[in-house]
Image (tube, rainbow, N blue to C red):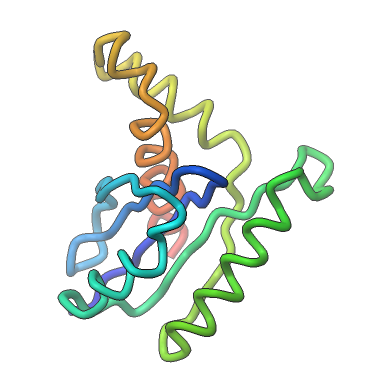
Length: 136
């Protein structure tokens, strides 16, 4: 069964989360350097069946674009160009980094690990993906 993958795209790092094959649970997969984003996905898609790509869309509370919105638009174009057979959907990523930081505290993660930005990116992608799964 095919999975759904979710991307928290950033200028330096990109957090990635994925569902289980039954699409019940979202799990953090990895944080990668953004420059390795497409090669990483090519390898992952060669080894795993993915039916949908979700990508966090950065918006301000008033729905206006943020400084990161143009970066994500370019990433969506890259995804569609490199993986035309897999649909790409944008999902609201507002407050996911803040929720990720709160989740790390609630999980009892040590301060040293909470300060690692790559952990925030993975957890933010996982939160977006789990929220999507809860809606479908």
